[in-house]
Image 1 (cartoon, rainbow, N blue to C red):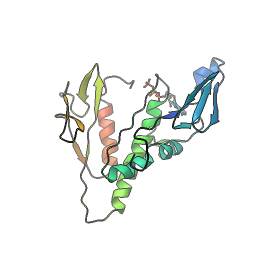
Image 2 (cartoon, helix red, strand yellow):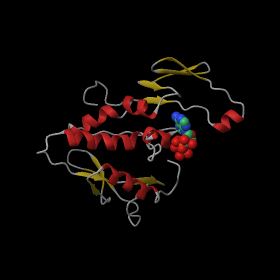
Image 3 (cartoon, rainbow, N blue to C red):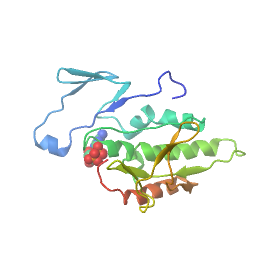
Image 4 (cartoon, protein in one colour):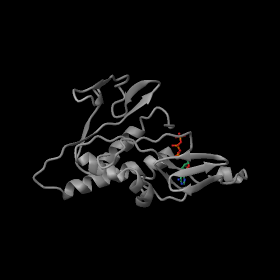
Length: 194
Ligand SMILES: Nc1ncnc2c1ncn2[C@@H]1O[C@H](COP(=O)(O)OP(=O)(O)OP(=O)(O)O)[C@@H](O)[C@H]1O
């Protein structure tokens, strides 16, 4: 991040017990002694920050991705990825419910924020926004917007920024076009797990 001394931030989001876990009689065993520490039993884990099980989608966005939108518009690159075991809440966090404003996850919130900030900028500036959507499956890059493109190569440009050669790039002008592109690509995903 541009305004921070760290390039990488690690945030831990804890999800509440789901119905199955409650039905099985499990109890919630995660503790939050400070804003950046979680405990599980006698084990302690420290992060840059911790989002409790009762955090809203908005709070998650504000604490993680929102500052990056400004950085990106200032010319920096940013990557956000979710890591966790199956059913830990990656899709809920990153995507959420696209049709419910309160339940939207990080990706749709970034999209709307990005466009909002661009609309507020100098109208003499011209922006071109392109979207790609691909998955890594069995070590191969598959283009989710053109399923005939499988095993695409990853290269670096002169600035050492990696890119997927030949991947489909869609020009988009409004947030809804990005969401429609996500919906289109999702139906081509090889596996529902991420
Ligand atoms: N913070 C949360 N609050 C409420 N429900 C949640 C939360 N996180 C996840 N869930 C619910 O738990 C279930 C599993 O979450 P999700 O599908 O996001 O997991 P995942 O990590 O993407 O799993 P997979 O790797 O299997 O795709 C979903 O029904 C989701 O709505």
